[in-house]
Picture 1 (cartoon, rainbow, N blue to C red):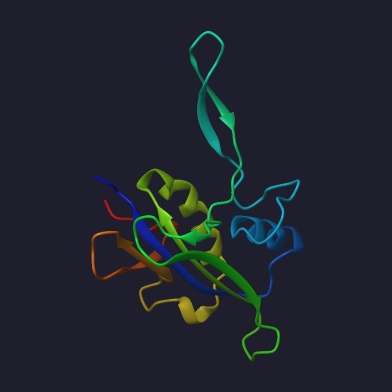
Picture 2 (picture 1 turned 120 degrees about the horizontal axis):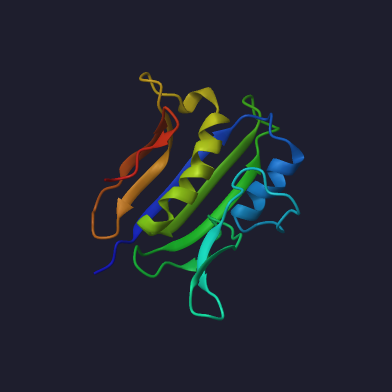
Length: 158
């Protein structure tokens, strides 16, 4: 049994993103090098075993939306893109990502999605105050559900 979900992020970000944040965002999308300083998602804890066989927590930074190629469970292709909206009336950045995600990854991916929601263009703001950031579909489901951030929380399934 597999708990894999299709995560589809489709969001327009305002143009007030710093160069450092833009570099980190590109890294998370798999389209840029890792910056020396991480400011969007800063913790990447993993449990490893020390020489005595005891658990130790270490940091292992990794891009969160960088999957590429054929999807193993949800079909189709995993990809990410970030494009400038400089030539459009609504300036900023257009972001798209399609990834496979396991519930164990919800917390870290959620940190990145909350950052995006705080910088989303107002067209993504719903009437109830939530920010639509994309869609989530369990790999066996036919239809996705809208994924939103509201009150600093991502609407992951329970």
